Structures are given as C-alpha cells and as structure tokens.
Amino acid sequence: MGANGAGGGGGWAGSRGGDGLVLQKILGTVLLTAAILRLSSQYLGPLALPPISNLLPNLGLFQKKQKKGKKVRVYMDGCFDMMHYGHANALRQARALGDELVVGVNSDEEIKANKGPPVMSMDERVVMVSSVKWVDEVIKDSPYAINEEFMNKLFTEYGIDYIIHGDDPCLLPDGSDAYAHAKKAGRFKQIKRTEGVSSTDIVGRMLLCMRERTVSEVPNHASLQRQFSHGSGHGPDNGTMSSGTRISHFLPTSRRIVQFSNGKGPRPDARIIYMDGAFDLFHAGHVETLKRAREMGDFLLVGIHTDQTVSSHRGRHHPIMNLHERSLSVLACRYVDEVIIGAPWEITKDMVITTFNISLVVHGTCAEPNGELNGEVDPYTAAKALGIFKIIESPRDLTTSTIIRRIVSNHEAYKKRNEKKNLSEKKYYEDKKYINGD
Image (cartoon, helix red, strand yellow):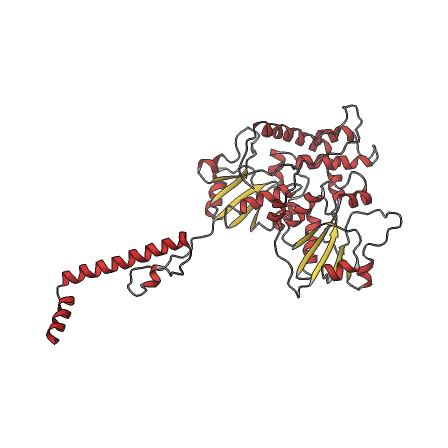
C-alpha cells in the first residue's frame, strides 16, 4: 500500500518532462474555462466572476494594470466677441472630445486685421470665456491663424492633442484656411456649429432696439440696422423701417437645456442665494456680479424674466435675446447652479420660503433701469420684510445699453465688418451639409 502510494506519488512527480506537460494542460484548461465563463457573463448576464488574474493571484502570470494615460487636452480658439450661447455650445462640444479644454482668445490686433474692430475688450472677452463651465484654461492674445510655429507651441508647451473648430469655414484675408496646418498634421477635429445665432445677427438686433431713440442720437440708423440684420421684417431702403422685429432663428429643445444644466439640486442644509433679472446680451458685468453672489452661499439660483416682463419694463424691442437664449447663456456660467426659466417679476413669501428655501435675495448696483408700471409694487418687498434682501456692489459698470452705444458710436467700422461677415455666412448656408453632432 505504502509502496503503491509512494509509487503513485513518484509517478505524479517523477518525470520532469511529464510533469511540465501535465501542469501546462491543467493550467491551460483552467484559464480557458475561466475566460469562457467571464466572456459569457457579459452576454448572458452577470455571474459575479472576478477577473482571471484574481482567480490565480500568486502564479506571477498577470501584470498589474498600467496606469491611466495622460489626459487628452484639446484646444479651441476664437474672438468670442459679444459671447452668446452658440459660443458656449461650441466649447461644450469641444470639451466632450477630450479631458481638458484650453481656449485661445484672439488679440484685439488680430481681430482688427482679420475681421474688424471688436466690440468687447480683451479683458471682457477673457472674463466671459473663463466663466464657461467647460473651459479649463485660457490663453490670452492667441493668433487668429494657427501657423506652424504656434501649432508646435500648442503641442509642446501646452500639451495639446487636438485642435477643434466648427464646420463653418474660417478663412484668412488671402482666402486660405486658418486651420490648414492642424489639418495637415492630422490633429484637427470638427464640431457642429450651433444654428440660429451669430454675432452678426446679434448686432442687428441691438440696433433695432435703438429705434426707440431719437434720429439725432443714432445717425443713419435705419440704413445701418439693415446692414447688420439679415432677417425679415425690414422696409425698403428709403430711410424708414417697418415695425417688424428681428426674429431669432433659435430652435430650443429640452435636450439642449439638459446639456447645459448641472443636473444637481442644493443640499438640504445649503445656503441658497437668489438673483433675478433679464440677463440680456449676457456680458462680463453679469458674470462678475453672479460670481460675487455665488461667493455668499453654497448654491446660486438665478431667475430669468420672461420676454413679456422685460419688454413691458424696458421697451417693446427688448429683450435682444429671447428667454431660452438668455437661459442657456446663464446656465453655461460656472457660478450658476440652477435657473428659473421665466421667473416672476415679484418675489413672493411663498417662493422664498416654501418653494425654494432661499436664504438671501441679492441685486447688483449696476443694472438697466426698469420702468415702473401702474400699480406695481417693489418686487423685493417680501424679501425685505423677511430681512433677507441685500444690494451687492457690481464689479463692473457695464450694461446692455453700454454695449449698444459702442456699436452705434463706431457704426461705419462695424458696417464694413458685417458686410464681409454676411458674405461668408451666405456662402456657408449655400454649401452647408448635415453634420452629426450636438
């Protein structure tokens, strides 16, 4: 028995060649079986099987997972003059193509040379771009055209993997493609342009608002407005204008609002700050005031007034941007946690306490004047009575009217700028093809 046992044992461990072959066969069978079961669980339902490396941890056959590779950094540039939700959506799409988004803001000199004078200063444009929640880093004074030298600088110094631009053409004065070098290098990616808005269109809407002012205040206003706005509703070129208002071509969808939303509510114990307004032609003044408001609590809720409310208090050609356009611009701001689309003019006690549990209602010192309607009460009466209303100092003396005045004071230069832009816009729509994207 002992001999037979020893002999059996000796047979199991005897011949080295036999041992190796048997061990390989057994091990191979185990690995193959585990692999099949693991693969099957992906299609036939979870079997709660651990990875193969966990089944045989001490055989030294499996290496540890390699550390994750470096983050993909993408670059997008632009003038970002009179920044709107179309710009924000482009930045959102660009960010989705990588892990970090670096944005170049073209210098004033480059914009003048290639497009005409910018309306907003470099500082104002940088504030706007930096406030967009999908932006990780900003490069000031970037060149309009990405030449080979600057492209290599992006790759080496900034660690950029891909350069992003919309499907609309970006041509230099000589007709060449501003992104030719990036395309040749195989480091270019394209996103879909946001339909229904452009800076050219917005300038036209602004000038239409100026119709309520005197002719002496706005020289050649009717002719100038037609140059900026390519929409319908304008009379013949005889120095007069029809009563038609510039129509927005923006088509709001619930999906777009979801894409811009944070999707998170406040914590039960959060200090909720509320600020309301028109937020028309969303600008650096709005951004820095919202930033200051956000610093006063844990959650910033922004109320955006309806088009009818804004029009009744500021004039029939206001607001310049409609409710959904304004809502998206505000939602794109990193300091804003949530918005009320179509907020009431008057803040009630029920709204403050029961509905939104607001801790503090704030209002900036720099804002557009609002005309009082007959019988209208102070919209902040309830908040003041509760002792939760506060006026905060606006960091910038900038309003929508300020921007309109800039356009009007330099109307000839902007007229030439928009004539050129309108030609490229026309060609874009003539040659336009469907591009899959968001």
